[in-house]
Length: 79
Image 1 (spheres, rainbow, N blue to C red):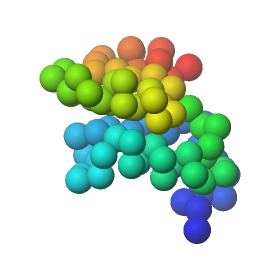
Image 2: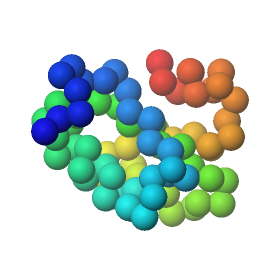
Image 3: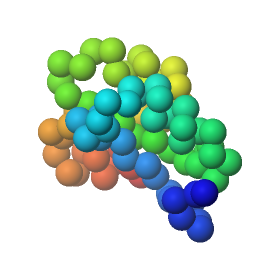
């Protein structure tokens, strides 16, 4: 079952809230759903999470930002 009837315009994945699932696990699950396959994914990472960026980009993330980034930067990245 899909999470919504219309796909979102953007998925923001906060890895600090992602639980035990890995970055690649979340992205593979998202991209496997036809309604979400082409939706941009912005991943929020902690400053010390060096592996998240290449892993996320390799599995379909569109962009990334530091978790404590100012809201104005997140808006810019989302547009």
